[in-house]
Length: 345
Image 1 (tube, rainbow, N blue to C red):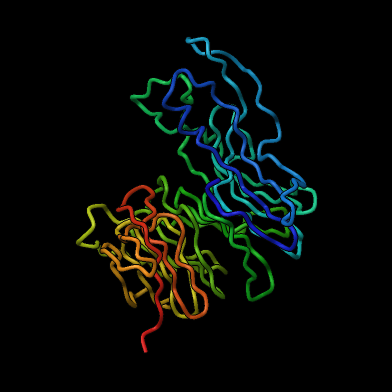
Image 2 (tube, rainbow, N blue to C red):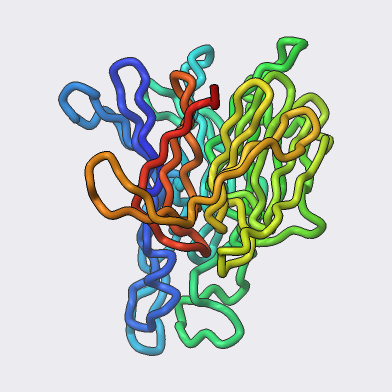
């Protein structure tokens, strides 16, 4: 499980992902592949399973053998890297799904999907990238026979979809993809695409990974290239982009893969370089920044160092900003400290 479960009313909705995507690509003895992403609904009081829905409905079955005599299975993949988004109006859950691990590629991979909260029934699914079969470790020098013959670009959806109501009352489901594409789907029209925008010069791996944030009319997303982009949610047009200035104490390049957080007037982002930053929502200029790459005296007396913020974003509650510093994803310095910030008097 790479994403937090979602608690709503009396149920806990748990997304399931897998390390099989990595294990299969580096081995000639691994029987690839049998994992299918899923969402499980549990009774919040007892933990009893109420339903489980697979992203790929067809169970994997043997489709051949490698030259080493290892069985090949398909279909597989469609990991759910992100937390389910709740739609109380439609009584639905929305998820983004990951790529396939081999061919044939299921139409529910690299997709935005809706599930009925009561039963887990798939209400609709829209695939935004086709034929994306990918395993970690595969490429020109790969030796594993598990590697797909026609390698895809690895354009998973790793960020929870953002359910947003526009000023005219229409609703959109905003999904950030690792390709650098931002998609708006209509949750009330079977997921029809409303608009899409490319936030990088060319489609690339891992651009938007773990999530963005939205206020009344703007979405804010961190990019792996090192910067924050703002998008008009009514039209899909880019409002502004602010590149990140490298932290001189960091030995890694810039990268903003962690989720962003927004409050009126400011959007917060933690980076691979160990810097926590706040930007103005109107034009993206830097409001303040704090270098977390240092030793800290802690309230519980444990020796602590700050580090990168690669996945979870800052949390804001009760007039405070909380940052878990030290989770490395893709690059950065590890750490082990929870930092709390309050407004200066």
